[in-house]
Image 1: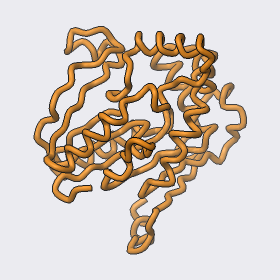
Image 2 (image 1 turned 90 degrees about the vertical axis):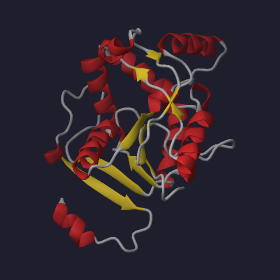
Image 3 (image 1 turned 60 degrees about the vertical axis):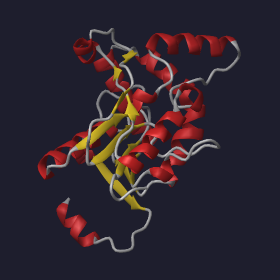
Length: 249
């Protein structure tokens, strides 16, 4: 951890809402004049889109049905830990971008689903990470221990699935069946790599719908903010002015 080169990480599963939280932080950085280096967790996947499909097929052929982006084998945890370690030490580090679609890929003249080249981060005042593994700890790395402020975004699981289903169908063109297969394949790694992070976070935001979400696979709409509550958990509540925070909501 570093006072000179602080690291903020937003961690959560696919469909949890981490992107919305990132937009909020970007607005804060812009308003406060903070020069932040923003790193997306997808940049530290081990495989590009085509290679990931091949790796999943190979894993399934070998009897492994849970190979997914949530797990250690499909990610570069050591490289992510090195980025955090180097940034805390000297304010820089090596990263890249994952190009999700044609719009993101166009400036680089690359096909979607590929990575840009590794490069050093530009000078900045703060490193901001958003992705799946900002709070991961394994036998080889302790990514969570290098983060100055670790925030978990973890809606109740049925809401998380509703959000993922709607996003993947509406913006990525997947069928309900295809998204359901992804959810099932990721469940093992969800339990072993995603959930444990939320006991290491400094703050957790858990959105809880107050409408019926009992079958997320047939839900036609995502519960609105007015149809939800938010549970906010501080790991160390000492010194937190809760009346002030409530007045700001």
